[in-house]
Length: 111
Ligand SMILES: [Zn+2]
Image (cartoon, rainbow, N blue to C red; front, side, top):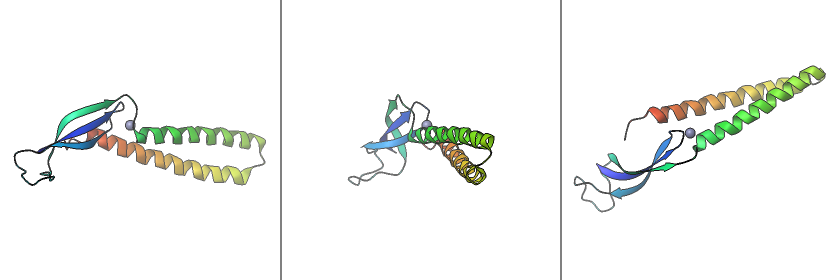
């Protein structure tokens, strides 16, 4: 088992970072045995890239929702509302996918 640094974001998301030290099972220079152990975990006081993306997409959803409400009240933008409804569903699906990836990483225990 070889030692690696690890990064952990405030939201719990983590990823492997630089290789630090070989273990006694591995003698080839610059190679690693394939099993990873944590050498040091760097804690980052910010949320991860996935959380950033989810936040951005959520803001977009809120804006689309507000636009649709306004257009429906005005009553003369039917085609635009229908298009926005489709976009809304797409973005909402993207957010679920990101949430899934994020949640999966939080429960992974392969380190
Ligand atoms: Zn995150």
